[in-house]
Amino acid sequence: MDKVKDKGAVITALGAMSGTSLDGVDAAVISTDGVTISAFGAHDYVTFSNADQQVLRAALGQWDGPTLAPASEVVMQAHTALLAKFQNVDLVGFHGQTIAHAPRTRGTLQIGDGAALADALGAPVVWDFRTADVELGGEGAPLAPFFHFACAKWIKATGPVAFLNLGGVGNITWIDPNFEHPEDDGALLAFDTGPANAPLNDLMQERLGLPFDKDGALASQGSVETGALELFLAEPFFARMPPKSLDRNDFAEMVQLVHELSDADAAATLTAMCAAGVAEAMQHCPRPPSAVYVTGGGRRNPVLMKMLEVSLDCPVRRVEDVGLNGDMLEAQAFAYLAVRVARGLPTSCPGTTGVRAAVGGGALSRPR
Image (cartoon, rainbow, N blue to C red; front, side):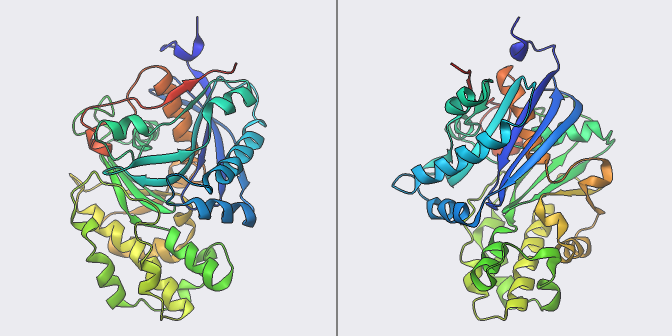
């Protein structure tokens, strides 16, 4: 029997994620049947060099052209080297690198070849997770909510909770764990909250040659420019009802809003914009969550976390407080989603991406 497609079997799945922050690739193992989480396993990480980051940045927003091939080569080399370190894996979930995302017009583009990766690793690979959702009218993002639902069950939540991912772009998943399945009507609401770390990272790189504002050190020395913050919140995106999603560069003009500010004031203002977007998002939750659990790089910024604590009407906690790994949650999510795709289970639904009906995206490639 094919263990990967045997819906009753718990299998070892390896997931990989390279996010919009462009800092590197996360990889993590979980044991799951595609419904419940049985165990969390090994994990690892590789950073993109400055040169690799420049290659990837040159491809952002491009749907075709000469920048895509070298960017894809960077993605494939990093993933192949990292994932080859893991042994005894039944299935791999490969997200690739999002280069362009415009679901209402051109679709969504993740570079990286899952079939070639399957050959290189000698293991079946699930990839191209977002296309089917977009083709059925969905936003194609966020995709981690079905895994967040499983995590809410794993931490034994008894009432509504929210998971807030602060990577390059922010997204939130509101969960009612009392439902049996994530695709049940009312079980989930998920959407992008707005820019998170990407504009601040870009500012730090442009002005200081640093990859990010470590520990919020620069923002802690500055003051928020309220005029720029008000202009940011006037963007039409915040008036749209969820589900909704963003491309990494949809708010690229944010850096221009703080162009004339000092380094510290600019950093403080961009940090406040991230928190303000989350506060706006909370108004869409069907009921107040008992807590917001923060994952992604943003949870390591004490200035941002303090802003969230002040602006939200519920406790704000790092996911580590409930035994989860905030650095690896998205990689774990694509391991989990890979099992669901291989077994014909849905990976998104109207409440997560706005897709017309629950759909299981992704393609399964086996090694030749």
